[in-house]
Length: 250
Image 1 (tube, one colour):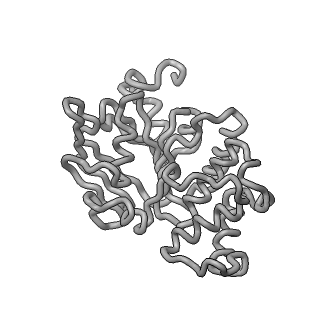
Image 2: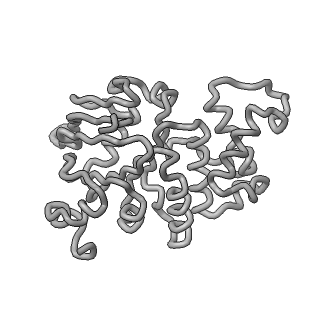
Image 3: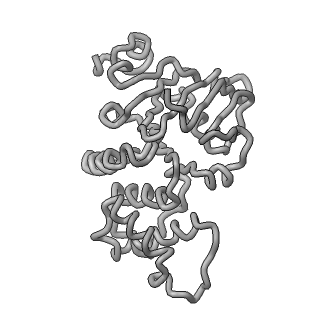
């Protein structure tokens, strides 16, 4: 079996009397979209925060790309290639789409440029910026101000800013939240186009999106992974149906 890019083993995390993670274990294989689902209060946010380093587990381990990162700080995990979409600096609405992405590229490069240098003439910035514009489908709007973007397009830009650092694993934390049907379709299409090129962990409440995009799904209930499998296996799992999916997915 292929060695997982990310392996979570036996994570436990308590907040007072509440156990938000309970012997949580799952693995993510390189190239897949792995979804993490569960009812409200299932511990999804706590799990993600432990992966990024914002919260330390009480026990258990997190191994990423062959290295134990359980106690590493957030910035060191980011340098290793672990990116989270919502953590990216808020969009600068007075700047263009291309300028926002260029700033993200520069930040991920780990060094700064001379303040008065022409950034639009520096190939170290322009090439990855334009590549990312194409990747997220915003190339034709590169010179438009970010303030002109719809909510869904801003999500596309935020994903692009996360991708600017060429991460090995991208954590998408409820990317469809607050979006109408049109925006959901556009962002779903973008994530689908990235499938196989970028390894992703998707946390999402929209089950139609999850089941259409995910290669594998892990279901959390009360902080515990009660099932992991393909969308077909998860749909057919009676425990999952009872605990979470409900009759609409029969």
